[in-house]
Image (cartoon, rainbow over all chains, first blue to last red; front, side, top):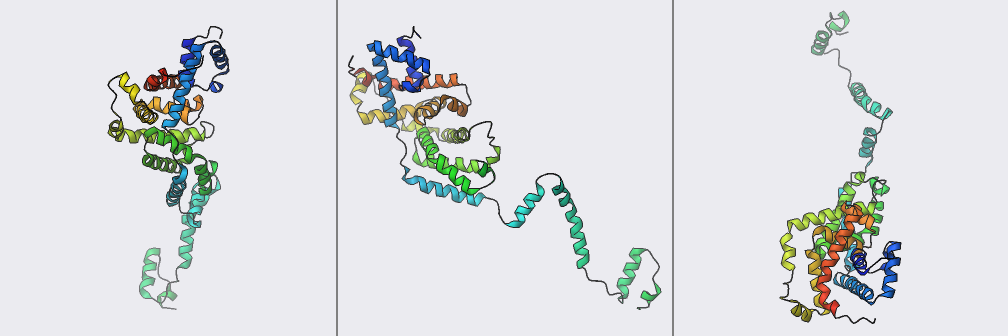
Length: 151
Length: 177
C-alpha cells in the first residue's frame, strides 16, 4: 500500500465511509499513513466525516414510544392467525404427519368407525315379519321355520 | 426462530423484541414515512410467522431473511405510491451560489432526506443497511442478493451523489492543516 494516493483514498472514503476502524485492515493502515502526511488527505477525510454526520442528522431513528403498541398489535394479529390449539386438531395434525405407524393407524380409523357403528345398532325385532322378509331376501336363503313362525 | 417454526408465540414475541426496532427504523429511513414504516414492519413480521417454515438456518441468517422480506415489501409499496416520494422532493436551487446561501443546518437535512429518497432503490438500500443499520457489507450484500463488490459500488455511487448536495458547505470547511 506504499503507492496509496489521494484518488484511492477518495474512492475508499466513498466506499467505506469516514470510520477508518471499520475499513479492511490493510486499507485502513495505508489511509492512516496518508492522512498523517498529507493536508489534502485530511481534508478529504474531514469531508467524509461531515457527510456521515449530516446523514445521521438527516435521518435519525424513530422514537421508540410507539414501538410497544406496534408489538402488541403484531402479537394480536399473530394470535388470530395461530391455528386452533385444542386437543382434537392437535391429535389430527400429529396423526397426519410423520412416517411408519401413524399413517397405518390413520388407515384403520374407518374400520374402527365401522365396528363402533355396528355395535351401536340395536338388534332387529325378529318378530317383525317385514324386516325378516328383507333380511331373508338380502341373504338369498330359505326362511327358517322357527323365525317364519315368529318363535 | 426454531420456536417460531414450532408455532410458539412466546418465541415470536422474543423475536419481535429483538428485531422490531431495527427493522422499523430501516423501513422508516427507506420510505421516510413513519406510518408506512409501522405498517410494513407489521406486515413483515406477519409474513415471518406465516412462512417461518421456509427459513433454513444454515442457508441465511435470520436477520438477513427478515430484512429481505421487509425490503421487498417496502419496494412493492413504493412502486405502488411512487408519485408520493417524487412529490416530496424540494425544488433544486437554480445555481450553486443560491444553494450556498440556503444551506443552513435544517435545510441541509431536508435536502439530504430528499436526495436519499431520490437515490435508486438499490443504492438507497445499500447505504441504509451499512451506514445506518451498521450491517456488515457481507450481510447487506446477502439481503440485496448481490456480490460484496457490487454492494461497494452501490454505496460509493450513493455517497458521491449525496456529497454533491453538501459540496458548497464542505468547500467552506476550515481545516487546520
